[in-house]
Every structure is written in C-alpha cells, then in structure tokens.
Amino acid sequence: MITLHHLNQSRSKRIIWLLEELGLDYQIVAYQRDKSTFLAPPELKTVHPLGKSPVLEDDGLIVTESAAITDYLIEKYGQQFAPQRGSIDYVNYQQWLHFAESSAILPLLLQMFVAKDGCQTNFLKGYADHEAAQVMRYFDQSLVDKTYLVAEQLTGADIMMSFIAEILVKDGVIEHYPNIARYLRQLATHPAYQKANQLEAQYA
Image 1 (cartoon, one colour):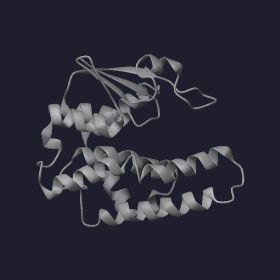
Image 2: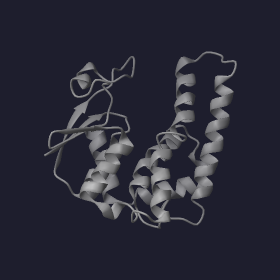
Image 3: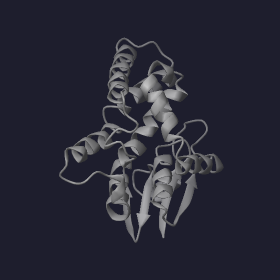
C-alpha cells in the first residue's frame, strides 16, 4: 500500500492528484500546520528528518521532493503521463517538471515571506516582484495556443505546474496571465484534479 504523508495547504495536493490519475490504491496520513507559525508539526520528522511534505512511502521506500515523487510514480506506474524518453518532448517535460520547484516557486515564496514579515525592505520586495512577473510572463507565453505544457497531453509537468497557477489565484493576480488562467481552467476539468481538491478540503 502506498502512503502519502500530506500536509494541509501544501505542495502534496499535486501528489494526491497524480495518485488519483494513476488509479492507485493509497492512503493519506494527514498533518496540520501550526496555526500561528504555519509550519509543519514535529510529527512529520518521524517520517523524514526534514519534517517536510509531501513524503511518499511505497514498499518500504521513502521518497521526498515533489518532482522526485512525480517522476518516481510515473516511471513505475504510469508512463503515459510522460513523453517518450529520448524525445525532444521528454526534455521539455523534464524542464517543466523541475521548473516548478526552482525558477517558478522561488520569487513567489519570496513575495509570501515579505508579505508575512510586513516590514519595509531595501531590496527584497522589488526583486521578488520583478522576478515573479518575469517568470510568470514566461510561463504565460509558453502556453500560447497550447492546452497542456508538453505534447498536447496531460503530463507530470502539468501536475507540478498546477501549484504555481493556484498560487496566482490565491494572490489575486492570475487574470494578469490569461493563458495561465485558461490553462488552469482546463486542468480543473480533470475528475482526478477535482477529487484532489475534495480530499485536500477534507483533510484541511
């Protein structure tokens, strides 16, 4: 049995979506953020020393990091969610898979940290805002005339990048990026995506 250690309001909702798309039997162990610090509870450190989520357990193997979990699950259980290895599409797929947790997420996290801190910054806010706008414009332009990011099919790259699009919704700026907004509406038509949202709400 696959076990997903899921933290509310976190990246692990993407893994729920992928598990649902793959039609796998799995169980969710849910954890709640501390309401004052918004940090994960210490119990998660009994699963992995960093105490981060998502953490996937499969046949005694523990896998962390969203992109690595996505890669692992697709390679083992659902290669239809990745282009053929060795193809140009596969290279593009890998780029987007890792873009989500590198270039895309960093400026958005910086914006969140600046907002939570609430202090005047000399450099950080301007940098974060500039980088976020630049990266999101790139994401938006990459979706021109596309339904999905790679090969006109749902892949793990879309599942990873869905989290970025959802942050833009939470921040109230997604309508500045019409192609991303259209793309997210398309992702939301998938029943497994809808089920992931329902499960996340259930464990919130």
